[in-house]
Length: 253
Image 1 (cartoon, one colour):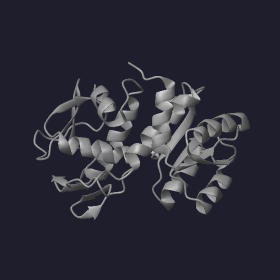
Image 2 (spheres, helix red, strand yellow; image 1 turned 120 degrees about the vertical axis):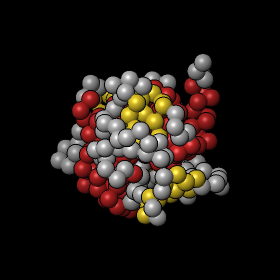
Image 3 (cartoon, one colour; image 1 turned 135 degrees about the vertical axis):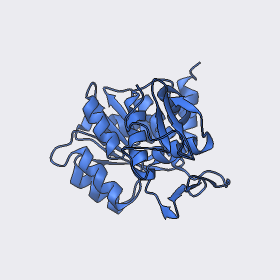
C-alpha cells in the first residue's frame, strides 16, 4: 500500500537535512521544476546547464548528490559522471530518455547509482534522491564483517580486499554487503532489486550491470567468477569458498 504524498514528502524532508543537490540539465523548464520540488523537500539546490559548468559548480560547493541529464550539449552526462567520480565519491542519479536501454546501461557502467527515465514524475525523483542519500550516509556504528578476503565496515562505508581498499559506488557497496551477509543462497535479480535497491519493480539490467561491475572489483578473474556465481535460471549466489567452480560472467538466464 502506497503512502499519501504528504507523508512521503514529509519523510523526504526529514532525510534532506540541508543536503546539497546539483541538478545538471540543459532544459531550463525541467531544471526549474526539479529544483522547485527538491527545494520544497528541504534540499539546497544548485543548477548547471552543461557539463563544464557542472564541474565548476561541484568544485565550488561539493554536492551530496547529483541529478545528471545524460544528453547534455558538448560534454555529455557520462563524461561528467566520470570526471566527478574521478575527483571524489558522489551519488549520481542519471536522467535518460525512455526506451534508451543502452544509454541506461552505459550510465550504470560509469557508476551512476540510479536512473530515472523521461518524462518522469518530479515526486518520484524526490523519492529516488531521498532513497539514494539515505543509503549513502554512514550507518550507525555496526560490526564489520569479513569473508573470502573481503572486509566491509558499514559505519565507515569502507570495503577492502586482502587489505587493499576497494573503490565501490553506493550500490556496489550495498550489493556486496548483502552478498556477504547471505552466503550460499541463490537470489533472483528481482530479490536483489527489492533487497538492495528497495524497488518492487524496475529494469533488471540494473542488477546485471552492478553484479558485473562488482565482479570486476572483487574477483581474481572476473571472466571466471568464483565468489559471485551465476545460478542459471535463478540469479546469483555468493560462495565465500569459491566452491562449485567458476560460473559465466553474465546475468542469470
